[in-house]
Length: 188
Image: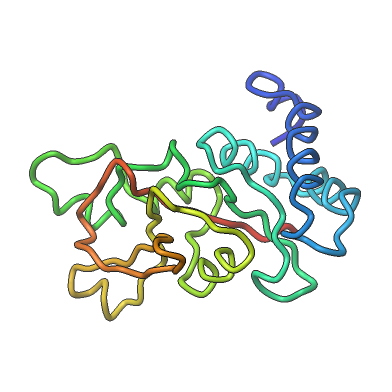
């Protein structure tokens, strides 16, 4: 998305200032990473600002997290204290959404993630994020589910309770007001 396209909803400078403020407030999420590097990457990658804006608008409070993958890679990850408010009450995937004959929610995690330009966190990534910051103490977040579980109609979600990160299962077609999803993308 170009700077001109962003002006209608949130100016590029306003978005960058929001991100910079969050970046500087939470240095433990990305030790040894300079804001200038992040800003340059955001401005160079055509879809990065658009993706970050959509993450921000849906309540994800995106920030840079190092250590989610290779130490040399920078990831933009949803770091909101609770599962992003604008991404709750969703079935796990389109197949689950289509299987509901009644009371279908507005959508599913995978279609929304694709629209935003992010990928759902895996269990390993979710646990890593929880190791640097306690999240989802009142909500829960769908995570990538192994095919062996998904083929049987289930899906996995996580939260943090009693001082521990829990992984649970539920029917993929279920949806709850307090369950959303967290996502990420690689900043090139």
